[in-house]
Length: 334
Image (cartoon, rainbow, N blue to C red; front, side):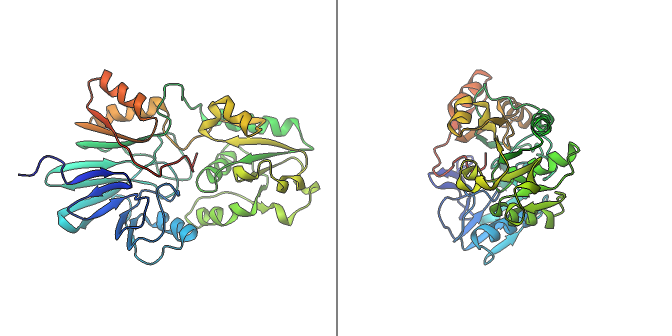
């Protein structure tokens, strides 16, 4: 008789599901990949078959040209994999299309969260707590120091700075997939309905979000407008462009950056950020520990982040846990 959960195994390059001979978020090309979301530390091209939500597949096609072998799975849909393994995709609340993957085999249930957050986000469905036997959770912000503020406070900081400098612009560095669209959508929710200007690298992903029903309001390309037209406006660009020559075309830009890492002052100083905006698409410490309590799994596997502190928290709260050593998981999205 097989040992409990012997059918799922963490390997350096991803999580391997033995009976189905498939991998979850593998960092190298495989025959069959189950992908949680479209960020480059979880998704890549070259797989024989890629199983993901329709939105994630659209993102992957845009970024990695992965249309061939794409197998769409809707939220709440269960598909049967080889070897008698069932896979169900459940909202993760991270970015558009992001999903937890529930795996069921031989009466055992395993949830792989991918990346997730518990805060409301107008650009994607919210995280759903799913009971299971093994809970494989991220830990990007797995330290007690990380407590993300309400996003409405960060939007107010941004809009107040803009109002105080009507002849300038506020240049917000935000990752092209997820963070940029969330910042724009939250600005609209806060009552800012003026045109928002985009670096050219942001346009296609913003249009993809709009194609999937996410309203972003009027967006304009910086390249199509003069410096005078952009005074008193918000401009969104990739973080790499914040202090690039490209920004010289803007009217007296005030540099801001939207990231959970802006909680760390040294990170803001390193990037010469004048207005740090603590906005994360990952769960903070309190949300990570609350989720572990709510899922109440027999065992927790902790990966891609600050595993040691969360592992210690589990031990102190009499919860079985282990840290996984997966490679290739970076902070591309936050």
